[in-house]
Amino acid sequence: MTIQTQGSVQTQVLELVPREYEVFGGLEVDHHSISVTFADHGRLMKSLRLPYSAPQLLNYVRKHFPQRRVAFVYEAGPTGLEEMRLRRERAALRTYPKNTSAT
Image 1 (cartoon, one colour):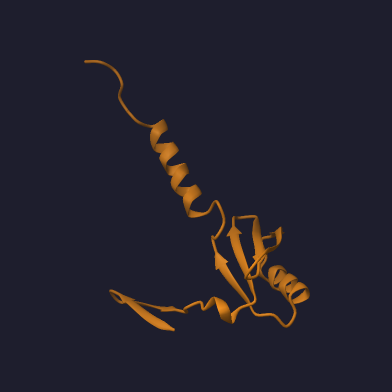
Image 2 (cartoon, rainbow, N blue to C red):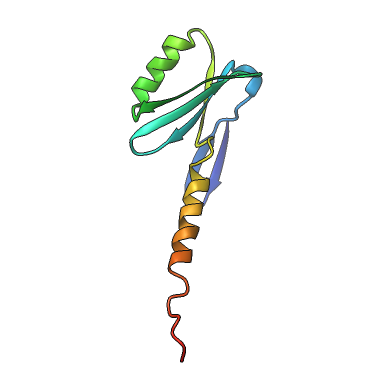
């Protein structure tokens, strides 16, 4: 674990060592659901969408991956921050230029 300091804010950063985990869960989260894709070191195992509920996600993991070390990665899918950036760019294009009248 490392501690990063920026101004007066300290953040603990846990370093993920892949060989210490057997299953990886890539999370894609929105207001209503959690999409997760599970993979091990060599293959895609399962993709599913659950209601927005951390307890339900953890229950799924306990049931389907008992006795296995699972690491989660947040916003690891094809949307997330990239999708937000694209939406902002599209919104900016719709409002530009603001004044197109000739003088």
